[in-house]
Image (cartoon, rainbow, N blue to C red; front, top):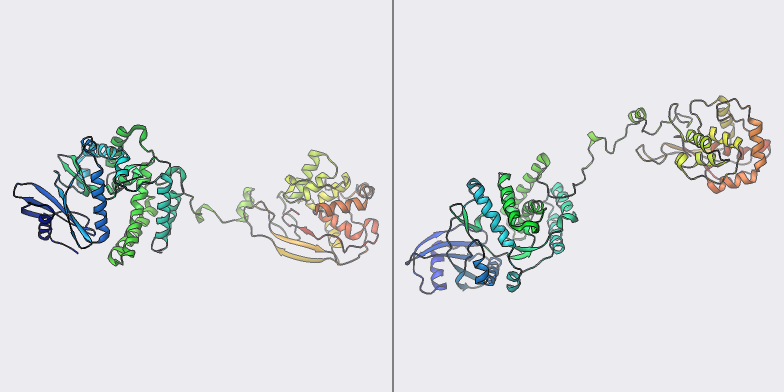
Amino acid sequence: MKRSPMELAAIATAAVPGLSPTGVAGMADDADDFDSALIVDDRRNRWRVRSPRHEEASMRLETELAALRSFSPGIRAGLPFLLPSVAGTVRQGPLRTFVYNHVPGSLYDLESLVALGGRTAEDLGKVMAAIHGLPPSVVDRADLPSYTANEFRQRKLNELDQAATTGRIPARLLRRWEHALEDAALWRFNPTVVHGDLHEDHMLLEDGRITAVTGWTDLRIGDPADDFAWLAAAHEQSFADAVLEAYVGVRGEQADPHIMRRAALAAEFALAQWLVKGLLTSDEERTDEAAQMLRELDEDIAEFGGQPISIVEPPRPPRPEDGAGFFDDTDDAQDGEGVPAADSAGTPATGTSGAGAAGTETADAEGRDGTAAAAADAPGGADAPAGDDDASDGDDAAETDSAGGDPGNGSAEDEDSEDEDTEDAVIVEKEGPAPGRSSEPTGRVIELRPAGPKRSAAPVASGADGSDGSDEDSGQESAHESGDDSGQDSRQDSGRGSGKDSAGDLQGAGGSEEETSALPVIQINPRGRA
């Protein structure tokens, strides 16, 4: 219920016996919660009257009463500013009106404070340092809240979740605030006594100096950054910097290096709290106002970036102009970083490096029998673990050439042999993963499923050096000497036989007939990796 200054003067006479008002005027205050007036009595003494508009505001005044009573005379004497004191109260139903002894000074808005210059900024920094240096017993005696750094951060996370459920907070702001709240290094601070509702309306000044601090309804132990949040609205950053410099000069090593980041976060998040309060009280005007301010803040941050509120920079979403999430086969192939394209026969394109080339290089470098072929056939090329194939050097060369070898030097005999080997096989084509920057093989996958027993001539394999097969006899003899059983067991154990091995198994050595129904399905990757 709103009360006029004259009504407040009448209430004050009931709260303070002997008070005889001779003049009254309205005073600035939180219009949503309180009605305030300044009264002058017949002795030219001044009094301040605050009357709550609802029960929550009345409880805040009760809290302030307990807070002011916890300041002992010794503590008051050591402060560089004056504190109000309660002269009397009067209860009207569930609400309680308070009358305070007047303290000297005048109110200034934030723009006027900034205009006062460096002297006022320095004085403000010292006042804030004095508040944060108060002994915790001030809060304990009044039985007021006390939070550790982690408890305070968790409260903010809970409030963020509540705000998110409204569906009225821009997504960019939610991500920004969530990232800051999850930045653990940002929340490693030492809790101090904080005013909790410090801003220009709760400070009285004379000659550019702060004479008194009022509005102690939210006194607690918590994050000192909350008392800096109102400075984020200052149109000149130099003023806030001067306040912080003076503050650090008094607090020294006790000053928090990240205090202004959390202060900026608190200033932004206050809009979300304002929105939630409007929804809870069904105040459509307040809700719409808060929603509009949030949209404007979101637009400003999108355009200018906003003040830094995190130590660790938030991840940037992928942008099309950066190429994130996009892939161009042509450009990447030219740069040598893309996945090589495949022709219709499933053979790596000329000029690209396939797994066969990697296998050949591995065989030449290592010189071990049978391991190079396994390395070439294994997924991942030459870096993949080698199998246990004990094939000879000749067979190794044949496998290397079949797996891809030198993409530009394949012979017609290779193509004829491959066509002949897979004549009766069931060919199933599968689309591989979409092209990207993954290290996994990509493109089409051709599965060779044996259709049954088959009799055909032994394949003619060209050498790894691109010759016409002059070393065929020695390669085949080595393969027979190593034994069909050992070669088959090795391929079944590793599950990575090359394409030429598959053809040999289907046909049988020397044109003999053998059962192929138990052979594994061989997948040939057209990108050059099996």
